Image (cartoon, rainbow, N blue to C red; front, side, top):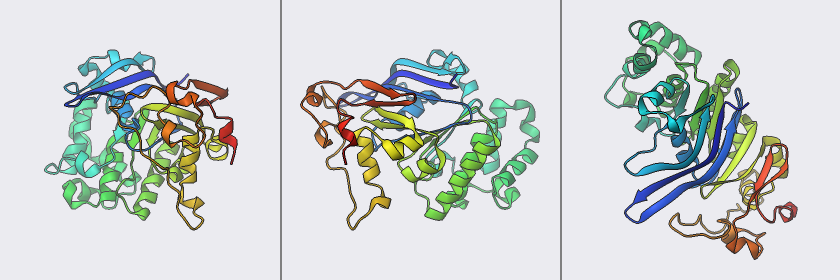
Length: 323
């Protein structure tokens, strides 16, 4: 049984230009000890899905319209904010994509990490320094005693991201959501952060939902891949099948745009993601798709199960095999 199951999740936002449906019926699951990679362009609904799981959709402008988020048998959507606070940070933790804005700039690292103990482990809040030093040592953070006394602005981007990972690990959560954990980091630091996430996976049985635009990280870490486009899942399969035998035209175009496929000229996917305010009757990828057929313009393609664990949302996936 999956630890996390998201079923037909729909999330909308109310703006001055009208209502926007950012997530349009997402289904996905994460198993214990598994890394699920979620890929897609900006605006595909990846981060909004993760915020909905964490119960962090701003109620003033956003709303989970329908669906279920089942975590260890409980529907998180039905929980009160007080009940959700017991889950968030304890059972489910999140590593945000910009540690420089996720950390409070005027509070020391020690006080920010201690806050997790105050909320979830109050019996240890006055004696947590030793545990924190051990945790920072385990995450290869140099001179942890000194780091605990520093402010975020005194740390490098890579060190701040390590602190975010440490914060996520304090309660040994069942699920960790890593939202673009290597964004804005240099290549060397990116490799170190990925190494830390691998270490976390190996040393715990936590499931990891890894949101990224970097397919190289997916190849290195994930067991399964979910591809999102315009608020929907368009393909799901195991990582080997994704790189060897992706079926959806968008998945194939993403793979074709990888730098590894450079042959004198970088490939890009022509066109842009549709505006979320558009009323699209058919497939959202229709205008950019090289395999489109007339049916795609006015009919929504269903999700088709190809084999165990591989599903694709496309009318014309067979022709997607053509080179």
